[in-house]
Image (cartoon, rainbow over all chains, first blue to last red; front, side, top):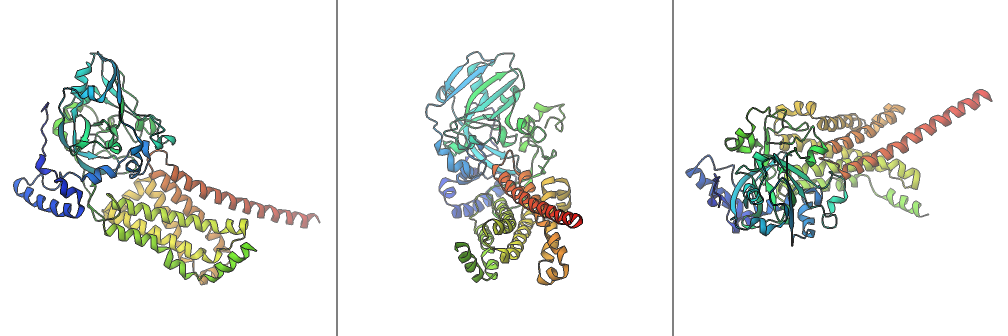
Length: 300
Length: 211
């Protein structure tokens, strides 16, 4: 394990499996655990309870499988992840087609319990399993001229019915600045709750950048390119006014169509209250220095 | 013959049946929400279901007249109930938005003014209010010809609702565009009819003047 970053949440904060498998018990369990946690550590008590497996795997945006939240869970079983390969190219020492196993070989997976904030103003807490992207990039050898990392999602119309519609300019593409990619919070996730990541959540391997809006955390990656140019990204291409390259979670910069000041945690029922969105999704201490001197209203 | 028997059957259905049947999907959605059966994000789900059903009822209301002209199937008797129920769904959709979703009563005007998709939806809601107020027999009699002109605002309400749907969607939303296409098709049929009526009116005037 790299151990460059420590969870503010521990194993004890995860709802035990028998509880999250049963919603009724879960609610009772969460209340009990919350009461205990509030004695031990009041700050962590209410906000950082991870969402249930059921919620995390049934409420997804993965437009390759359809634009409704339930479409990915309904359609993603068609994606065949066996023998998955990732093309690594651009400014790297060892370009080539890598199997997921070979990229992960020698790296041990960590659990990271991260806040997840969608640009649509809903949020979850997800217990990911994965490796730091930095460890994978170290393996392929980033050349000195590289400034950005570009990612691409699989583009298989036969397995991904949403690709029939021109919702976005397929394949889905995302990118990070190299320093963002190398940040210890930036994860390549292969699991959730200690289980292999389900297809609808981006199997077999996806990016997780917890201080950015969820669409930056590209799923089912088939290509990683090191480049010296800022890569084109799908939502930015679709609507540059609404979706910037950086897309850091920022409560003070509104989406043109809605406020980003508050968010609703998934799973709170019909009378769920909104809660304030945190700067950099609560990871300000860890990542604010990456953007020092930048006007975040311009580089949104 | 077939159409006639359909119309005869339709005539046997009292219009109050619609005030019982049409609220059912909305009430079911509300009950599902209260019993935690609307999925992980029940507020959005309820809001969407109510809004979509409102839009569908508006479209059904607009379909009544082309249906009569094309197939001779007569649903005109039911149009008031369809329209009023559409408004009930719009109202419920609006209430869920500002009571459960927005949750900030002091922000409602800012949201309506600042977010164009909210502006469009709210404008559609406002446009429907005079239609609801003049939906009774007394108003129909009192307003005479003006009633028909006034109730053409239904097209405006439907267009605003369709625009609202398209604008709030992320990316290229086929479903929202399909709804809008149907509304515009009905409007095109209606405009065609108005134009023909105007032309035949002019024609009549011309023959009268020349002849």
